[in-house]
Image 1 (cartoon, chains in turn purple, cyan):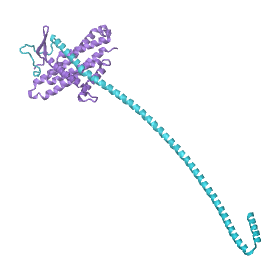
Image 2 (cartoon, one colour):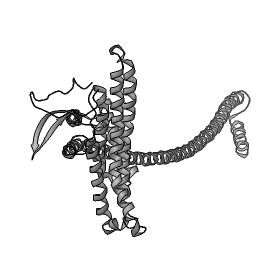
Image 3 (cartoon, chains in turn blue, purple):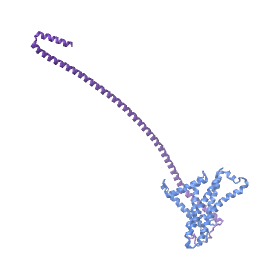
Image 4 (cartoon, chains in turn cyan, blue):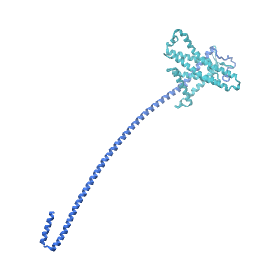
Length: 228
Length: 183
């Protein structure tokens, strides 16, 4: 029974360190390929979009409009530029979580993926905060009293860590449980019971975790960039 | 479970076993690769999907808003035109009533004039007829007198021829003529 993110090949060397082709990278590129193909299909079919949309056009419009409205309501006015970024992040996490349905090891069950996403959020939080508040951004770490600096600092550092480990832990938990179930069940019973668990761990928990990661990232950025 | 998906290990290469959570240099490198992957994906999705669809929806929203505005403007113009037409129809109705009233009045006056002329003409005819009848009556009376005179003369001549002489006859004629003249 192997839950690990396996190494399949050495892609290249970075100095003395080999960079491996992992399950996560393969699954990530498959998910990226599917999403890019979908986006290309939309771009190709865009000139055939009608005022009264068909099923495909309707789905795409709902996705875009929902993310646009969601960004506005969560982050407030003036932050609409983040909507395309969070659309991509949400789609990537969602499709990554769903990839477990097709036998792939979810990219989000790897700390490298969730850590990368969390660090990107961390960078956006502070980049946006500095840009919006200038010196006020630094003052916040010393408020309400300079003695609070260590707590404030740790509070900021804990945000990406909690983001990364929440998503990683939830998805890895699903992977481990599913592996245990597959290992425990005889071959004949590997059809119905795992399906129910896949529906919970991959679809329900996967959608929920994608939503939680996105909304928390939005909230952190908006909170840090809010000018009093 | 994942054996069927991605086994592309290099033949003969000695690879370490996979990891679940190793906080090492490999994790940082993999994080950097994943960050690049996600940035690339979000960029492509934004360029190919999000922005074009958003732009399409914005253009459609603007076009529909413009169409609604134009439709409301057309409707306002149509309502104004309708009011104008209704006013015109009301004016025409009033004018029609006035024309009809004037024509009726004129017809009545003309009718009165014609009746009056007819009455006057009838009266003239009546009077003329009465005058003609009177004249005719007088003529007839004269004629009767003339005939009576002739008859009386004839009778008198016959009587005179039988009973009186010429001198007496003339005297009697003269006396008769004198009496007629007096009457």
